[in-house]
Figure (cartoon, rainbow, N blue to C red):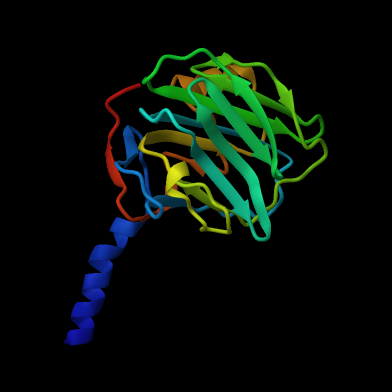
Length: 223
């Protein structure tokens, strides 16, 4: 009987940590600075990435730098990292190489952010609230490694760990989608208008995730 009660307890508590869900109209809320609180996004990405597009919405009143999306593979730091350095300044790391784009933005205010990268040309495109920023180039010919650990709320210095409270995200993240291709301007606009087209790496409306620590799912009340 004790073993039966234990398994019932496990089944009841497990969905609070690990789940597969349609999160449309919802956000992950990261309520505090922390070196532990985060969300792991789970994907079966078994081949290196030669191209990608990532889109998400974020709302934060932090004026310091923080991680928006951290993707690491074994033995490589900053394999794919989206970082906000300060108000109006966004960085993309590919293979531990960095480019930065700037935009005039209000603070604090929610933002829809997209970034894409194409290996053949090395061109990275940044979009904020449906508008393109200046294109940059990095790691031409490179392939982003497969079998990643993908973390929201923290920046990884090791594979799935090595978090620093000073780089943690405080705020809300939602509508996160990722593709293994470079989206057109029309497709970026569709994502901005909440009609993403066939995301095939990460899909907010069919998301596998694991919550660690103090992260809460709440309705999206801003846009």
